[in-house]
Each structure stands twice: as C-alpha cells, then as structure tokens.
Length: 274
Ligand SMILES: [Zn+2]
Image (cartoon, rainbow, N blue to C red; front, top):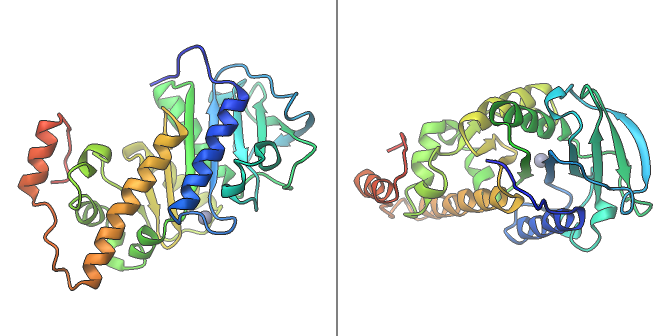
C-alpha cells in the first residue's frame, strides 16, 4: 500500500497527528506524557517555514532504505493530547540524509522538547522494516498505553499470543475483520531498549498491533495515522470486554469459534486464529 498524489502537505500531516493524539487521550491510552507517534513520508517535503531551526542528529540505527525520506516525530516528554493545539511545538521533522545514518532535525522556535521520543529507535526500525518489505511511501507508527490491554498483559496467561488473540477477538463480530492477524504479544522488555526494538520489528511483521508486556502497545499502518490508532482502539475495546468478563466471573459467552469463522467467511477474511 502506498499513498498517491496529491500528497498531504505538512500542515495536514501535523493536524492528523494532533487528532490521533487527542483520540488516544480520549480512550485513556495516553496519560501524562505517555505514548508517542511517528510518520514516515517517502516524498519530498518542505519543512523550513514551520520548522526553521536545523541541527544534524545521528539516527539510533542506520536506515538506508529511508534515505532522502522524512519523518514527523513527537518530542520526548510531550503530551499527545496537546499536539493538536500547537503541532510545531510538540513535533520534530527529520529529513533523513543520504546513506540513512544521520538526519537533519528541523524544529520550531516554539519547540517544547529536548530530544525526540525515547522510543525513536523502535519507531525508526519498524518504519525501515516495513518500507524494506513492502516499498510503501507512507508509514505510521503509534505507541500508547491503553489500560485494559496493558492490565491483561500483567496476567501471565495473556502473555501468550494465541491465547490473547482468542480471548480478545471473541467479543465483537468486527474484531476478526479489523484484526485478522490477531494481536502480537511480547514479554516485558525495558522501554527504549535494543531488545524491545528487535522484538517489535519481528512481531509487527506478522501483526498490525503488538502488546508490549506490562507496558503498552505499538501499532502500525501504511494507510493513515488514524488507522493505526483505530487498531489500538479496537484491541483496547476488546480488552475492556475481557476485563469486565473476568470481573463478572466469566459469565459472558463471547462469540463461538463457529460464529467467528462464519463472520470471517462472510467478509472474505483469511485468519488462522479460530
Ligand atoms: Zn511507553
């Protein structure tokens, strides 16, 4: 999947990131400064009017596949819910240099952060991997901390990918349509670490959303930032059903395997979970 011309301009892209941040906040997935968003754009974009200050930064990993593309990334310690009011103050624009080892970080004089998000390595690695695999010219990555999903990941049984997906996708008929690959799941790994980055790349090859055990989630989309946020919302809603059912002594039935298979068949969804 790629985005076709006319490409969205910088103001449209920053507005969409702002709206995504606001939605994550509305669903309780972004308390305080939790969560971060980045978007890879594989077409030329002029950023100097909004982001006139320029410095060279070393990228946390070499991304030759993204060379000459650019990224919009949330700043470390910024509140996602506030990005919509003043995108330039909360976002950095990175033009990736030839070779993909360094970038020019463009920022606004209104800039309210020192560094880009502390999860920048995982964002960059997932963009690189997906661009390398699919050749897409657009890719959005969102990290958030939805409460119910994250809570479930504290229960050992839910850190099994197959179990987690089977338990989550049984609560709404649309779940298998929206998340046909299920939900990936990683053990707890230190935030910002190389281990988390490597495991996230691997899991997001097979899924569009992965739970970071005892921490939160990361979702991706090659269509739009909102699609990535939608995936978080679908999975979190399912997790809320599951959590409610646990509290209710598991009285809820959920859709049966046969019922879910019938939905998948009717919607032409290929799935291996049920
Ligand atoms: Zn986090």
